[in-house]
Image (cartoon, rainbow, N blue to C red; front, side, top):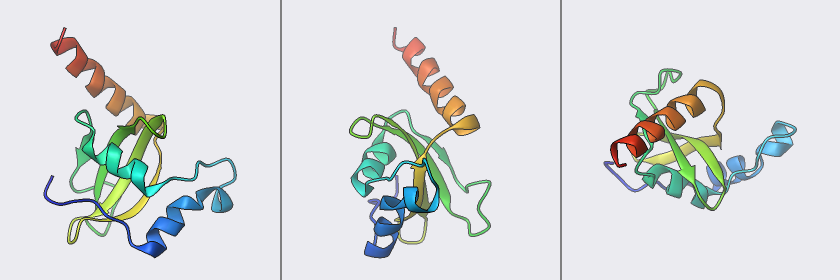
Amino acid sequence: MPGELWWDDEDAAHIRSRSVRYPGAEDIEPGWTLEAAADRHRVVRDPDPSSRAGYIRIIGYSSVAGFVLTVIVDPEDWSGVTAWKTRGADLRDYLEGKEAADDRHH
C-alpha cells in the first residue's frame, strides 16, 4: 500500500464512539484498523464505489478485534476517515477471497 494508515484525534474519537451514534454497533480502536489494513487477505476497493470523495475502502481482519473491519482511507494523505465492523456483501467478498487464497495454499 502506498502509505502508512494513521488517524487524527477527531476521527479516532469518532470511530471509538460508534455505539453512541448507532446502538448495537461496535466501537472501533484505531489500532485494529492498522492490523486490518495490513491483512494479506485484505480486499481493496480503489476508489470505494460508495464514495463521492474518491476514498479507498479496505476490508481486512483484525485478530485483536476478532472480526473483519471495513476501513475508509483518504488517498491524499493515507489518513483514516471512518471504520466499522464488516457485514453483508463486503464480508462475503472478504471471506470468499480468503477461502480462495487458502485453497491455493493447500
